[in-house]
Image (cartoon, rainbow, N blue to C red; front, side):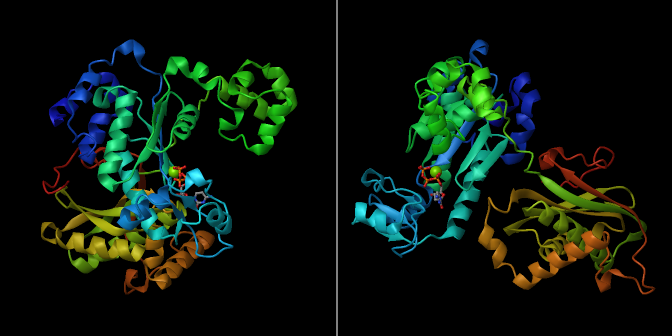
Length: 472
Ligand code: DCP
Ligand code: MG
């Protein structure tokens, strides 16, 4: 079994590349929890020479909406299921694999799908359920790599470069990810692994459902060559027709064609297609959109010690953080409060937020409870609040967002607009003003964002002062 000791023993190279040691220290990952002897044997075969320049996994859930419906309702298992409205004019969002041999698929009218498969069961979509399952899947992927790029609810790139020492060669990584997704959700995911994003994406599409396709780095061009040009990401029916007109039917035809002629015929797109056909794709897995935390903290001119005094600053910080979350279309699953005493002791507490939120009011209420747990350590000279475990609103529980009081949502969005139009902090809550009508005197606010996991946050105070033993 992988113990934490073995995790510590990661090769220096891997540690440097993605700091997997710290990364896994944070996530207490399910990914490492699994035992299998096969895995150890595979690990022994990771000779340095065979390593790829990058290892990219593309994961795509099988018949996602339909599989969730079959999971939740055992009566649907093994049956052809069409997810869509119960209306002849409606459109099929997806068809279960039992319905696909009949020619049913996404974007087809319900009428046509029922004509092809009259015994299919139509199930209306439950988007809030799919977004919840999606969030769980993305968290599984997060356990495998700090670099995950979600493409849609059921699809993501996972950059596994540098993780060979942890998970073994690419095939073993793929199996691990599949097992972990099944364990966490009961659903099947298909995985493609290659040394570029583009090839990983093609690979996952080739063998569905429940597939695992590995394209060896050295064999990339040969593997691509016999495939139809429409397999290339971005080649739709129109481009396919243009390529066919040039006599280019397979990716190999495209790879061998003269790039100058292609550029003349198709412009820049031609050069790009030629690169892709030859296995060249410089695109990196873009996880930068996923920040770990957004926070705001302030060193105060006057120390604070009562809950009311602290809450003024928490309220302000919550509003600022909330506006920035909204601006980035992110929401948070955690909130953390940091208080520094006059003797420079740092205390912090954190709490989970369920559902995830970007609302200042919710952040504030949670932070107030956290601060109450530390009030006995006061007086304090610094108050900080951070939202962490961030996710794109689209990729997460969108309906949870609407479950929040809509009035609160509207109010906060209006505040954002006014503040961005007329300058930050144009509008203040009445309770943030002191009796003389001015905002409590403070040193400048330090707003921060961090793309590092919580353990690695560059909290300048930490190196100088003791940590609250209750932290993390
Ligand atoms: N979807 C949709 N409308 C479409 C295509 C898809 O609403 N035109 C939804 C339903 C799918 C989900 O998005 O379940 C994921 O899309 P995929 O293209 O990945 O399709 P599936 O996961 O359903 O099937 P596959 O096994 O081919 O990936
Ligand atoms: Mg899918």
